[in-house]
Image (cartoon, rainbow, N blue to C red; front, side, top):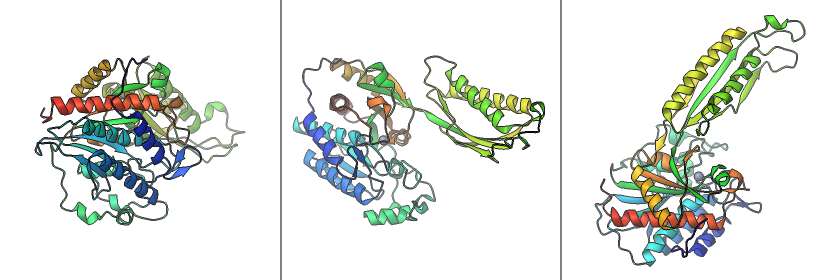
Length: 423
Ligand SMILES: [Zn+2]
């Protein structure tokens, strides 16, 4: 695998930080629960803040509850190099999702501080608030707040106990009144780097410890409703049926075939939720609605598949005498990593004696929101069996060390070569 003779980062210190943070909100042997803006989240943030300070950064919490560590460069006007991820977790989550991106970034900066580097641009490490979105049913809150992309009703969203985001922020010590007057300064951030576990099985299947992300694929979310006619399962002859479930089943199978058409393509298609009416064993299904999740890093290929899928739905409806509606719930475009950052990652990995593969990200990350305000790059770390959002989530210390070393070397290279980060 790798021929690195020596790491510059302190792998032991990094691992200690990962283990110590995992004790906050610990569930079972290996899981964590640090819901956004909860007491556990606050405790985690405080601990991480203390490590930022130890590393040589000034740290503060902004009005959106993002924890930000600042290592000041000599030119305060130069666009900032930002590194980070999140430390909030799913209710039944793992120790590595988000956490390695924040703790790895702190380790990268601490290494640069310790070797006496004097950057021109400031380097900031951020633990973004509420990336996961499980508590208030909408994620990427902190990063969207910081970059000026919050929506109108955002503070009124409530969790399952009826606590609003506004109340939770106040409880956390952040005053939403401070949002007023906050505007994101276009151009303030020059580039963003995020280290994250892959949350999928691709790197493991390739036997590769780390990978360089090409982009984050945007999902197309549709809800399809097929409408037929209910009838007695014992009396209506097969030739006279309008079976909405049979039609839906054909579409589900067709979707699976469509996304597999191009071998080697990263296209994925999923039907994850289905509702049958009237849902009785002796009635022919009259109404079926189901969701479609279609993703691809190539928007043209995804668009072409959508056209084929829609024509398939029309054909199946004709064949079975059904009517249908298709609702578009989400349609996000893929967001590509900057070529110059990918090139730097490859070059630095090469100097480490590695040749990491490129892969796309199916899930979204804080980087997705950052991509709208600056160039970004991502490093993925292999995780066991692709398991994530689960206490069984696991990434080995060796793989995390490799990913963090690459993060450090790339950040250092960017800060040295593009100290001003001007394009
Ligand atoms: Zn994450």
